[in-house]
Length: 134
Image 1 (cartoon, rainbow, N blue to C red):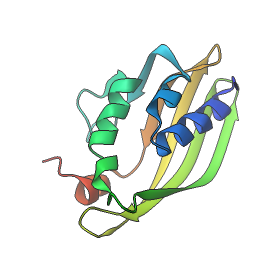
Image 2: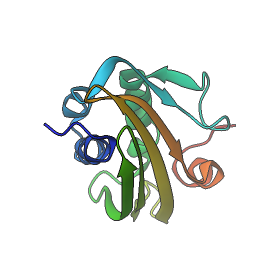
Image 3: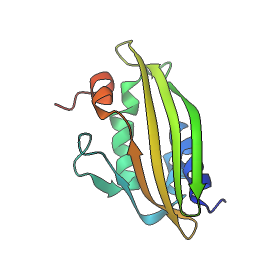
Image 4: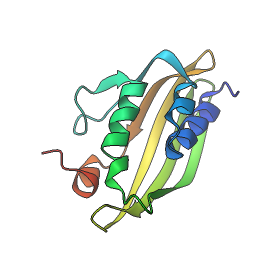
């Protein structure tokens, strides 16, 4: 298993995208935290399993069940315990609209495990396209 933040982050995202949360959790320290953007979730900082569960029930479930979504990796940079991974996600929503959003996720690792995940993306667009936050 890789131990640098870039490799760990890529493995985590690949497991998440494949719908395999247990594989993603195995890359995280028991105390690993996910920080949501203020407009997306309350509370903003939660344990990784709680965050992934919430995302699966809200964001991921907003996609059409038969076609799902696809991800295009754009860039991944990292140095030791810090990494930033950029990607785009596209797909059809449950209402038949085309979704396309761009993401950057920051990962921090310690001792070969992820300790912090901080995604950045257009939360207003997500709210409009995949679920209603109001």
